[in-house]
Image (tube, rainbow, N blue to C red; front, side, top):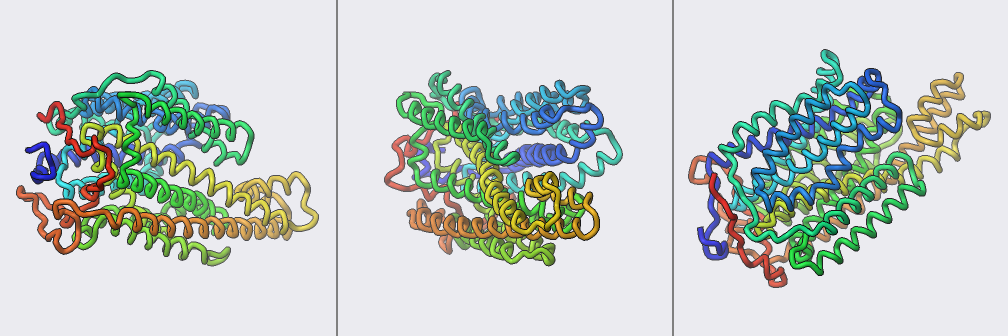
Length: 560
């Protein structure tokens, strides 16, 4: 194939590449499922190994801390040593760490094994995403491939509570961590046969100071966000968050002075990359922040059990999977920027429905809202990821994939931290004004803390006093959900307008961009179905793009 994609059509994926996608998608599904079932396993492992409160926090959080801190390092490393090689090393490490986690006999051993899972997990996601980008050069096929991959993450999250509940009912708590082992073994067996190897032929040397700045800044930022989300505004997490953001600025300034930066600053000057990154971050921000409150609302206000709450969330999970899978099909008629804006407009309707939730009528509106907003947000995550990775040079696909995943982590964390703080502040203000007279001071303090504490205290109080406290807490929490829903509605609407304004007018390239001229046809020439239409990865024909983007970089090794 010519190295100039402007004059030669991209190669089309065949059966080998689609089979390889299935291999990459299965671990994606099981890794997400593995994370979901951890929360179910916490009571069981607490009874078995008796961790302290601090140890339990580290057991739950250290995995995501290390994932967030090491993603970009791992993505850049994959560009240098080979993406398939790093993926297989990570798969072996993840499988072994899963075994170690499953059979941990102490809290200290479990913390260490979860940390090893985080280190290995940081290599899996960017390596998988960059390999998909390299295997599917055709933009139509690539949009389908990314949508399938994203859908598998969503499916894993959807079935996690049910699968985990069944396993915990019949086996010991460590069994939930064994779910990913078969997928890692399968990947190690068939990966060397099906997956090609790619690497950056001119990677340059890694700057140790940049690595240190990046890891410390991300760890401090993520830790600060998580503590703020869980414990409210306190001095230490605020200092860590500010310090992390400050170090991130220092890191960014340093990259501009290096001949071989760890993170290419020019990427953020490319319009498609920057807007897609921002749209994904905001989409995940509003989704995580709202669902953080919805889960509590269903249990504490509506009164559902955890299993009933999981079942009530199925419309949202199904909507997310449908949105991700239908996004590439919609490219038959629309450009990717318009598919994203249409989806986000549907999400706006979902958030608007959520603003109508009241204390006594919540279940059905919440189920409708979850289905709409997840269906609407999913195309932005699937196509935004594709647009980001496709807008960068092929040799930098690993680093860009890692940026995308880091964006996911920070968007999710900031949504819970910021919107969680807003909703909690509304709850505390409202409940303080409506508490019944005669409530003991210590009980009143606990009621003001969280809705969970309020429901617990109401159950301990006698007769009408407990009923009054429970009613006041439920109304106050519903008001907090209302404020959060209004904020999410406004932010999502602004995102719709921003994406439409900044990405919609970009010129077409090679006639590949959607619409009627994109053509119909759906077969890859080898019997492999694909979504017709095209996609915004070729919408990067922006004359202001960095010079390096105009130069196609051939992989050092395209052999299988």
